Length: 505
Image (tube, rainbow, N blue to C red; front, side):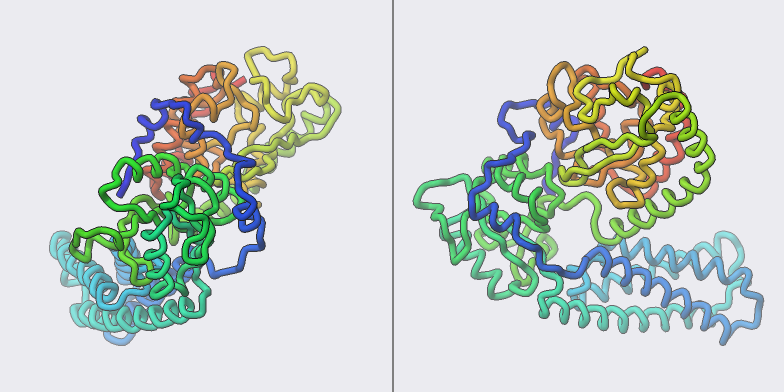
């Protein structure tokens, strides 16, 4: 898979405009498609989340049912074993990449990997029972019965799930909005392959190609060329794009790398079509779009079940925090109102997921007639615009607490790259002008706290080095996201607030 080193991407600032907003460059045809109503399809993340939850629940219930039938003992010991084994099976099946819509379409491969994961669970249980000398406490009849019945249940469940997903696919309810990079005869062959084997899986929007000669006509197999590769950045911010298929030969290494450097800022899956390659690899080297073999070049950072988990995590944490912190928020609101006239909350436009504008909430920390909605001027030490209450709540980050409402609205996550004001500058340069690849931090939803904040990069960003360090940490978070990393960042945020207070004005 193609990988861009975040640190190298940040340090290699080049004047090619790839980091800049491409607004206004779309052709009339691209603008028409970008502004057209989007046909509703089923959410892959929801399907994966529900399918995974049902699978885990069925295995746990089955384990308990077999215990009730064959074991005459108290369930106090067995229930933790059942829950632990089910959770471990879930982790292993995820590690085998078998909780994805594309995996649900598989036949023998899917069943084989799932059964292998299930077998590993019971091998681990038996080894653990021997090591901890509790083998006499575990019923072998129950263990064998759960293993065999669970294997049969997984086969039946996966076959039923496969049939359901294939049915939805044939009905066109799982179509991915797709664009092709490339043109001419090669792209025409690719389109015909998609029509023959993936028409129900792909909603093809058009093509993007940097060539403007006879090798790349304006219309290919009935689909229009919508612009150059750089225009796809703005196009995908105007309308949802799920998948980019690159129609270039493997030998065109420089063209492929240039294209990837331009598009890596987008939260899309990027696949290199293998239909043009004369080389033949083993089947494990390919993934498939319908029957089209492709190489995985880049994946959206958080997808499928992980997207569902992050959504649940955000809502639970935000709601809990609102309840626990409501006395502090109420006291803050009263203090703001008593000190100066004006609204309690301050609203500010910022860039959110995929560069879309969101309206963020904060407690007002400045005098009403001095507020700066665009943040064209950074707040500095002893800034006369900031009230006495404002200085305290900015130092302690209490001013950020209303963003819990943004989390409940879905504009923010609890953890993610901190969103910046539109006109924020470092060394008199807008952030996206100062740092190449800046918009890559918008491939995930922004957050209330993040990896940069707990590592000391909080507060004033008045120099290019400071904003580069913050972006570098944001990209590291995106590339290495995991459940445990989010939990660690949440746990370390209160600690970092005290150690970084000197940087907050």
